[in-house]
Length: 99
Image 1 (tube, rainbow, N blue to C red):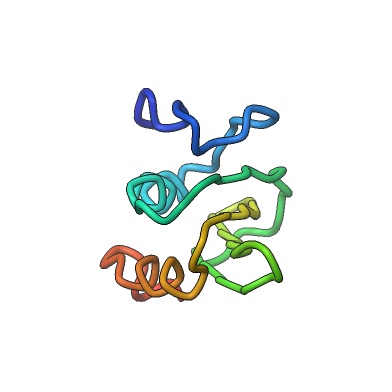
Image 2 (image 1 turned 90 degrees about the horizontal axis):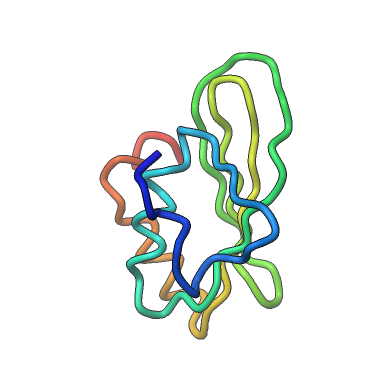
């Protein structure tokens, strides 16, 4: 993981471990000006399988579920205009085939 990725006021401090498959996604999300906070969820083991990313809109946040090769992790992204943030996240070239 890149040193300093989880530093700054956009990340909550309660949990800072991130699966490797989510690092690039979080680095991009951190750079979006409309994002106010990123809450990192727990890591849940799962059987091996393809890498997938699901984006769902909750009432006050975007729920991002990243499925790695052997684990699943959920993130919550908070910000002002959730639909604009979602559109920005969908433009990440590295995740186009994982949605």
